Length: 179
Image (cartoon, rainbow, N blue to C red; front, side, top):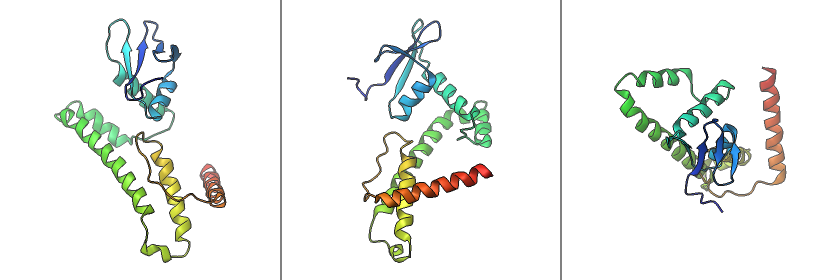
């Protein structure tokens, strides 16, 4: 069984094919993206030179998502990142980005915790409980995209609440597609 604490070693052959050393099979960028989304660290090494290519492939995965329209990075942020390579910001930018993502993960965690803390003065507002459950479901979904994030245990939503949330989500998707 693979050690999840150790990075998954991927070797790149001269043919540019990527080889998963744990499963002894070839993988694609989409496979590597899936490993990362599931919380696994990866390390991609050139077989011949031993060069670490991890950053290059991670940037390629991000670029492909951005090109497909899965935009996370606004143009002004990308522009600032390009500028950072030509200025003294190049030394500060990695720490800034890492700290920003740490703060984002921390604030998501705190937001989920605050939703589950009772008693809440807003609990007396009509339909507050349904709104709280919807927010919890939304934040749990968002947190699933961040490996290592474990949302606090919340009360299990009844099946009819989940069905109602799914119905509302479907309605929103239909409205968005009409736009």
